[in-house]
Length: 487
Image 1 (spheres, rainbow, N blue to C red):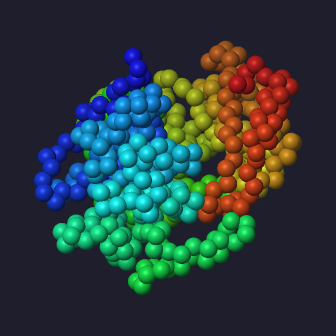
Image 2 (cartoon, helix red, strand yellow; image 1 turned 90 degrees about the vertical axis):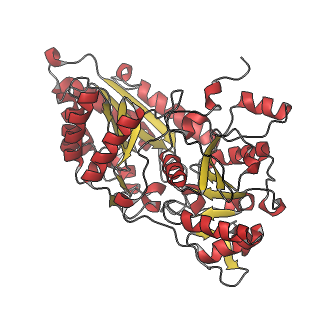
Image 3 (tube, one colour; image 1 turned 180 degrees about the vertical axis):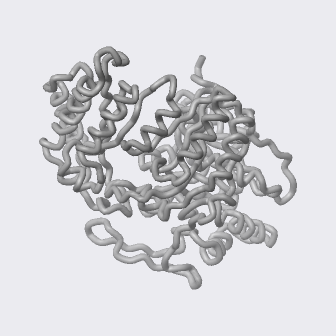
């Protein structure tokens, strides 16, 4: 076969939306600029896809980055990039909305535009081209990619899109131009940033010196859009079920947005403030409805810090009853390492104790204080001890390399902390009660300074520095007494 996983491109999945085109209907291509399995795991697109398709005058379809094999064939045979539902070229749509979740996808944005036959630069586009909108966390810092987008939607998508689509329809009905629409969007719709309507100048170091609107009525500052009432915000009752296994192949129940923690490296904690919860009754409704409409075998509670949700215990008790009847697993990511969380996890994993995940982020107490993690070694070891006593024998630990003010001692601390946790298992669990040998999986990722965080101006390590730090981490693990138990 010349194309791996053809199911990525055919559409027609359970709960995908097909509509009959009517005069004046707005066509919106919603793009996640990465491969299908990753894009289908993204909750934000599922929410917007569902919201748009509830409107009678809008048809929203999905687009993902083709994998290298299909990309090559499409270029050779001059096949334009198409949307999954109708298989029609993206270039024929009114809007191409691209979610910008991480900087590594920026080159994929250019791939999507190029394969679609849409000019890369906004200034080169004509009335025949779709309006290209950027959204998601990276749109909060749009200037590095501003020339490729007609418009950025800054903030949460549930609030202003209806107004934006209405303005578009009004302009179209009067025979107005794309420039007229962009001007009205900037003036009338909150959260909209149209790069072509601003003059931006830079200092020698590349930072912005000034940012001035060039047209009257265009706001000098764009305020992010935010949903305060999550109970009444749109949320999919019938999420699309992929034909092939997605990265996160489960029902996702968003329990809250925002985070009360103030980790200095975390962009999401800054962007999604303030903390907003969904009510217990709302979550019960969505959990049962989504499980019924998808047939999924797992439900995951989504938030930046699930332990901080005020009704977590009641929600888990409800899900335990519901999910046991349906033989569905419950996944609880983003939990703190404390007695309450372990009690909740103990209920969920009553029979099969799979792994627990904790995120110390740094190997030493000094560096955890620098990043404002708020976790002491004592708390980490106490939590791990409670987990081992509760029947777990596999623990995953997340760390970062390349944090500001990091020293060799901090990096060695990753191996030392992993070793202490491994040793603790044999101290707290009697031989006859051990569930096999302990397994510590220590995962390191590289720190990338993010805009709007206290570390936004911190320098990022070079590739060589990162590789040296990774090598030092592995070497430090090999020096530990319990090295065979640490992966």
